[in-house]
Image (cartoon, rainbow, N blue to C red; front, side, top):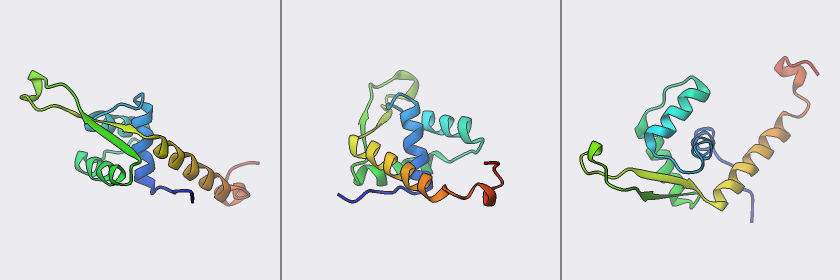
Amino acid sequence: MAPENLGQFELMAMLAVLQRRNHAYGLEIQAELKKKTSREYAVGQIYTTLARLQQRKLVESHLGDQQSDRLGRPRRYFTVTNAGVEAVKDTQQALQKLTVGLEQALGAEG
């Protein structure tokens, strides 16, 4: 099976889910992204990306228990699948290979 490389935001969304112990809902993912990247991402952008990843079977979701503070609407929790973990690893490896030898170009001291 050919390695699956993820787009930048796909990778970031999946890493945010994994950072939350591989069980997170939209606002937790948004908070994790803001904390780690210092950038604000719209919840709609996050859910759209996760829906696309779910179609590719890289993440799964399930509804949590109904909570009174959510007007009876359950939260949708996301989990990265084994195939998703492999896609994250493949993407990280590809990025590492692409950066080999670029220390001077990137301004890093070797």
